[in-house]
Image (cartoon, rainbow, N blue to C red; front, side, top):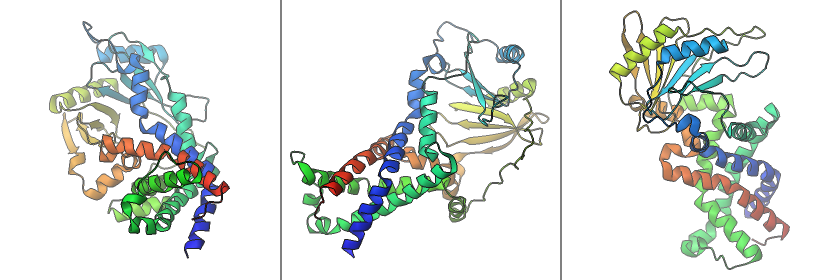
Length: 363
């Protein structure tokens, strides 16, 4: 049995070596995308606001809409005075892209930024991580590679179980002065045990975006209703409706009067309704997906509904937090860094695995 699993482990590792390396490196870069992006774009996220008075938002947005002929679908506002506010607009006309265009507005000068530094770099990384930039075929390769990582992790534990059982202290020690296959073997096995749980969490959460049946199973397991996504428009051109600016400003004022503790909020109109939805993150939120939502009625001039992340059931929190779970952010900054290291280490596992295979490692 052990000989069979050695062959399976080796063959699966060889087959997936390139893909797992790409997935691991791109995943490592994406772990701190938000922090890196904010650092590289001081004109958007670190504005010099001292001794400056912000321009009236309504007047500023009206001016920008008129000058650039914009349809504003949503507005994002930060509580931090150093950060620009954002206008969310429809995808560019004449392109096949479905991505909405974001306009970052300096609230003190009215300066507009539409392209962030490092944005292209992270977009490339995201698509490589998601589907190797080759569409549905790449998406399936990534999914299969993810399943292979689960098998490699568990089979690696099985193959290294005896040394661990016999003397765990010795089995988990690495002699960095060693050379050749002895060093490669220790690096491969010891770090494989250290990162075993991380690999399983990353893989099992990553499959959430790979297969619809898997996603639906997780929803069912978490006892959460599967959301009904907006109907497909087929070949019809989608119609985007602009926010009513006067009503949006009323919503913003009403929100600010009732809720003070927020880091960022986004205002959008609820489809087929006169009400508005405000999604917001608290300043000390659990992670970047721990959104609270507020439904506001303009007619009644009041908050109709306030759903808080902390009030969600465990299953609802898990589903809402799938991306933070995948990146390790869900477990705190320390574990987010561990997940980053583990993700990047897939390249090391690929190299040491290939070297052991080449040298004909005798187990």
